Length: 394
Image 1 (cartoon, one colour):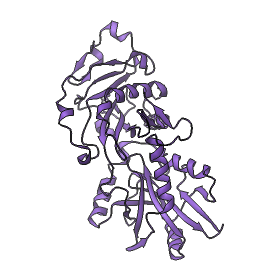
Image 2 (cartoon, rainbow, N blue to C red):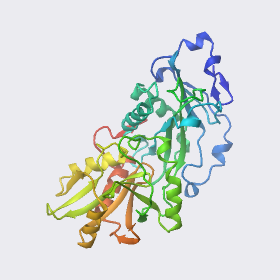
Image 3 (cartoon, one colour):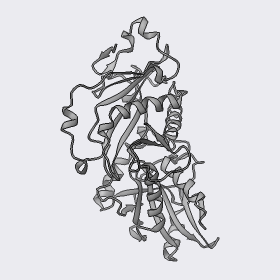
Image 4 (cartoon, rainbow, N blue to C red):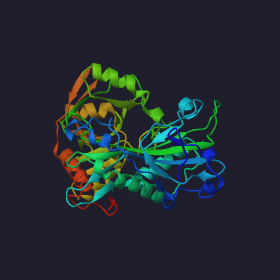
C-alpha cells in the first residue's frame, strides 16, 4: 500500500506496521512498485531523431527517504510525478543536493539491457553525499543498483534503440530538512528519474571549439570539484553563455597562476601530445589528487583502455599548463584533444581560444575515434569489455 501526499511519501504519516519495514540501508527486497496505467505520455513521446537531451521523462521514478530516527525507508517505484517540498527544505537554500548521471542501453549485439559500470556511479554518489556531510551515505551500492535495474526494466519500452541512443538515468539526493539554519540535514530524499536521449550534441561526433579566456574558475583545491554537486554547475552558466556569444561551444577551465588545464564544460578533458622530453607520444589528463577534478566514469575507462592496449603511448595523470600546450602546438606536437563524460561520451576538440588567439588542433584524430568506438561498442554490447563493465539487466 502506498502513502503518497502530493507526489512524495509523507514519512511522518506512515503507520507503525509500515514503519517496521524501514531499514538502516536501502533494500531491494523491500521495493514496491506502483505502475503507471495511463499510456498517453508514451504514445505522445517524440520520435528518436527529435529527442532533446533531458526533456522527455519516462513513466516511472524511484524514491527512498532517510530520516535520523529510522534511517532508510523501503524504496518505491511510482508513476513519474512532481515532488512536494517544504519551502524551508535546506536543499533549496544551501545547495544540499548531489546527483549522478548514468545510462541504460539496448544491446545491438543481443536482446539484453545494460548499464555501464554502475558501481562507479554509486561510489561517486556516496562520496558526494559524504562531502556534503549528508547522513545515509553508507547505503549498500548493490542494493541501489538493483532498485535502479528494476526501474529501467519497468520502463524498457522507453529505451530508444540504435547507436547514440540510450535511457539517461539521474539518481539525485536532496536534503528535505525543514530548517532555515545552516546545519547537516536530518532528512533526505533519494529519487531516480530517467529520460530517453539521443546524441548529446546536435553536431554529433564532430569537433567543438573551446574558449579558455573566461575569468571564471570552475573549482579549486579543498572545494567540491571532485564531487557531483549542483553547486559546481550553476556558476558555470554565465561563463557558458559568454562562450556561446563568442561562437564557442564550451569553456576550457583553467586554474592557478600558470593556467593549469582542469576540465572542459562539464567534462573531463584529455590532450594527446608528442612529449619533447621523453620523445614519446603521451595522453594527458588532469590528476585527481588536488581534489578539483571530478573522477569521471568515462575518464577512468579511457585511462584503463589506453594503458591496457599495449600501444607505445605514455598515459599520464598530471598537470598540463596552457604554456606547455602552446609550445606543443607551435612545434606541431599537439596531436589531438577531446572531452569525455557520460552524456557525450567523447567529444573531439578542434580549437581553443586563449588570450584572444585561436589554437587550431587536428580533429577528429585516430586515438579519439578509437576510444569512442571502443567504449560505445562495450556499452552497446558489440564487444566484450573488461570484466564487470557491462551490467546486464536481463
